[in-house]
Length: 98
Image (cartoon, rainbow, N blue to C red):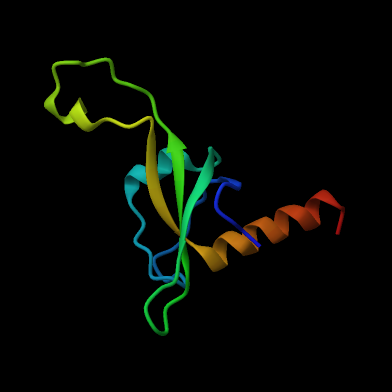
């Protein structure tokens, strides 16, 4: 099972996912990039669980930009848990040759 602190790579998922998590174009840059599970959240009744993966991000170097005042070294993205588990399962099976 996935737990807080696990390393997981970002992946693409469809709009009809188990947790009804919205896909954002900004997420494209994190496909295949390793991040850290920050939070696991239950969805509302009838909706699957989701996970927040935090990815490292690069400082743009602009100290004059007011939006950088609360700048963080990571950025969080939500992913549907069931799809994540399926991808991890497929990777593990491939790894052991099944």
